Image (cartoon, rainbow, N blue to C red; front, top):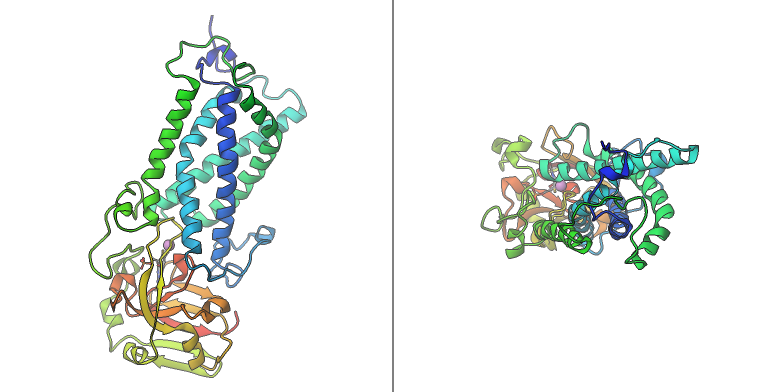
Length: 407
Ligand SMILES: Nc1nc2c(c(=O)[nH]1)N[C@H]1C(S)=C(S)[C@@H](COP(=O)(O)O)O[C@H]1N2
Ligand SMILES: [Mo]
């Protein structure tokens, strides 16, 4: 007798069955919901509705309905959100793969559609499986390959998330009641997923589940450390910004793009060459680094927290308050938004807009020093932005120009 993938007898693993599929499904129900919410929150943190330079998905239309002004408290907000998003995403990979494996016989059932309803259901499953794989693959590639991607990561991951989540909600509504029933009914295993001629078991259903859980745990243990410093960071073997700290000394914390990568030459950042141009209501002032250092200096302890999930602990920054710079050009008391431009000539992270609430926060600085020393060239010398609770991308390095005014 010949068996084709469309006949139930082709699939012989005795592990397949409604209980196994339901356990994984319930884990994904919770996990993917958290991924979706933290993903939307992360996008809001860019303040995309403030300025087109912040907006990575300018054609989002109604999908931006939920955007809100990103707060500056608590100062670790983005660090937590993005650490959860990326670490949870990586951790769920084995669960997703096991879930897909557990239902793969259904992919081959014939006829492809028994009715219109059945056809629609299978089409939604295509969006579910395709969308799920797409989101996990784009996310992992962005974290691991540092934006090497066919097309910009942000719109792909953003629109993909909405397509995937819509299919996911439909699926969850249809399947959760049955999944919960399956979890309660432990012994009688029946239904289309159960193989009619099971092979001899090499592992029990529970054993298989432990295997998936172990895989998840291993990924978790080798990823989560990228959100911490010290010995924990060393455990983040899978994370590009994990492993040992990049260097010793006050500037020895993680670097996203180096000065060399950004094309910043030492000649343009020297005391003689570099000037900060600040523009506002009353005109423009130009300040050397020496001028800035003679203004009132303030300290704040703030982390760098990247969209890729890695973050530093709080670093001790010292510099001029953004609201003091606003006051210098005629915005006393109630500072407006600011448009920040870097010396950097190419690349999408050389400009950013900050909202008035971020400018007004006394912890928001144009930093000149970190941990008691001059900023290193790679961390943004002569001056960089640091704002509480903001994603790393808004902490522009090698700042050349600040333009205050409502955007
Ligand atoms: N000019 C400029 N500023 C920049 C970037 C950049 O590419 N160019 N990258 C941003 C991103 S994405 C992050 S996460 C932080 C990283 O800061 P660090 O390299 O000092 O850790 O810098 C931000 N500032
Ligand atoms: Mo970043």
